[in-house]
Image (tube, rainbow, N blue to C red):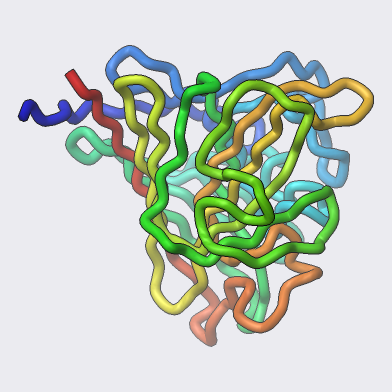
Length: 265
């Protein structure tokens, strides 16, 4: 049996516009989906989310207020090997490195001890209808059937009749889910993208956004989000005990996102 080939992963970011990841490539394949959104470059903190695709840094929440968090809409600054954004309640620093064929992003959030937050690497991926989401299961999964905070508990991959591991053609649906796992694989044709998040003493998960032409209602389009995260809810305001990251007495939370890719012959 011939093994898959590990591919070098490369990333480009836009520090001036929220630290957004504008490209994520491996072996000639561009994994990030993009959408023409003229508001993105002129957005200001507190404004509604401007969905241009790529990978957005969402903190301290995804849903709720501020919409998709407070970091994506602010200019970041480069300081040595780090990218840094200063928000009213926290400071987020990120260092992205190429380690062999992998991309490793190390994060540190500094805030007052006890500060509760959610972070997500809000990656929108360019995938075919035949793509499949891989999670080692059974994993506890929270399905969000609408745009609110209500969720239905189940086990990966099918919750309330929704096969979250399959994308398929557009069917006019749009659901979100949070899978209580630290890693996820995205299989599309011969290519596989792996994303994992690790930290000490904080809850981790992977959020999914399975929009098959059901959102927004007035002008729907297709978009697929695969989002490693700290926390296990979309909206920190609706979080229960243990559902968010919490800043310890040291005043800092650190975590790591690792991205790898391979291709079958």
